[in-house]
Length: 148
Image 1 (cartoon, one colour):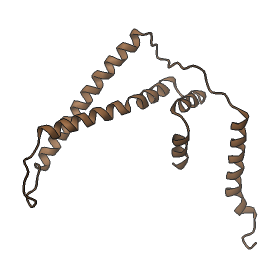
Image 2 (cartoon, rainbow, N blue to C red; image 1 turned 60 degrees about the vertical axis):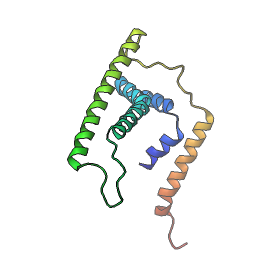
Image 3 (tube, rainbow, N blue to C red; image 1 turned 30 degrees about the horizontal axis):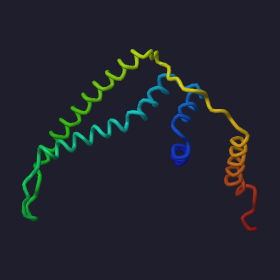
Image 4 (cartoon, rainbow, N blue to C red; image 1 turned 180 degrees about the vertical axis):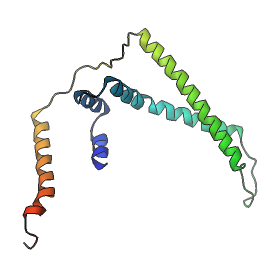
C-alpha cells in the first residue's frame, strides 16, 4: 500500500497512464482510469453543490442550545438517498453529453497523447539504487550475524 501511495505522490498521472499502456493493460481500462481522474473533481464539486442546496432548503431557525436542531434519522436518510439519486442522474447525463461531444470531435476509443516518456540513464540509476537498497534491507539480516 505504501508503494502505491508513493507512486501516486511522486508520479504525474499521465505518466501512470503511459505505464499502464506499456504494461499492456486493456485500452478500455486505461481510458476509464483517465476519465475517472479527469472528472472525479467535477463529480465532487457537483456533490458539494447539492449539499449546499440541501442546507439552504432545510434551514432550521435558531434554537436554544439544549434543543436538538435538525430532523429525524429517517428524514436525513431519505434526503441523502434523493441527493445520491440526483447526483447519479446528473453524472449520467453529463457523461452522455461529454461522450457525444467527443464523438463529434473524432473520438474512436483511443486516448491520444503527444509522445510516450523515454527511459533516461538517471532513471535506470535510481531504479538500480532502489533495488540495491531493498536487497540490503531484506537480505542483509539473513546473511549477517546479529551478534556483530
